Image 1 (cartoon, helix red, strand yellow):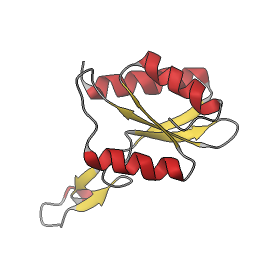
Image 2: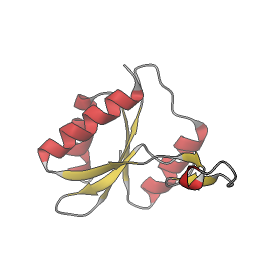
Image 3: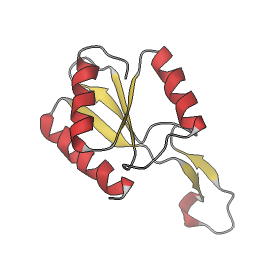
Amino acid sequence: MLESVISKQIRVAIARTRRALVMRNYVGKVVPWGRKDAYPVDAGLGEGSPDLVGVLIPSGRAFCLEVKTITGRVSKEQTQCHVAWRRRGVFVAVVRSVDEALAALDRAERGGSE
């Protein structure tokens, strides 16, 4: 299954729980307004940042998920970003399915860091 499909399934499942607000973090280069003559600019929260970013309800704690396929690997940049965010109190977990994402949500609500 594609990462984008897994990510959408996770967003829908979390929304149904009403326990967190989570959004897709599109990271990469984009050309502003689709102009071919414009310079590409960075999009998203930076290289290595998690795919899904949000907040737990009602605490407001930052909650992030890095979505991977069954065989997908976490890059060096992602690992570095996740460590830096966790050190600052953000929950960050790598998940490969809706079940893993909901289990991560449980851990985040209990105060875990990953």
